[in-house]
Image (cartoon, rainbow, N blue to C red; front, side, top):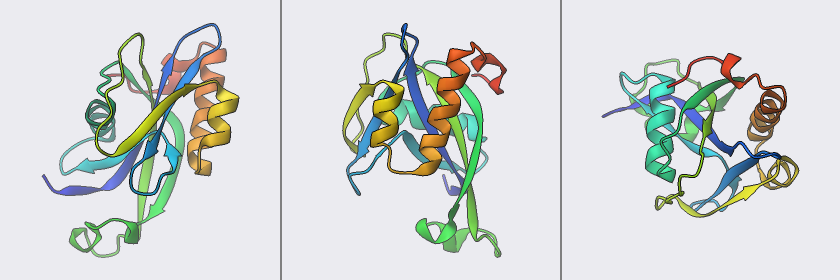
Length: 153
């Protein structure tokens, strides 16, 4: 499949008395982030989030759309020359995934993962957009409002 001009990021979480969040260390740049990847042609952002989550972590729990959005310069993607003329930024969609007791199985894109509290995860995440999405997720869990976030698989 051809790479579509959008990006997804998924933050797995466990509903514990104090929620825990899984973050992943990328092999290529060694930065900490959620599960990230690109959409494929004809795929919705929600479908891409579910697929990337399974491919990169082995998790299959329900995926919830978050309100957080941002853009990434198109030049960072090798598929950029194949996209429609005038594509200069790629929209990034954010999701949360309920992990339950499933075991994470890393893909070769990550060297490790950790389950952390909100505060500890926030300190490790490299990108502001990831921290914003984490904050939204933490607030939604605290208020029991995740189900109102949007689409669910």
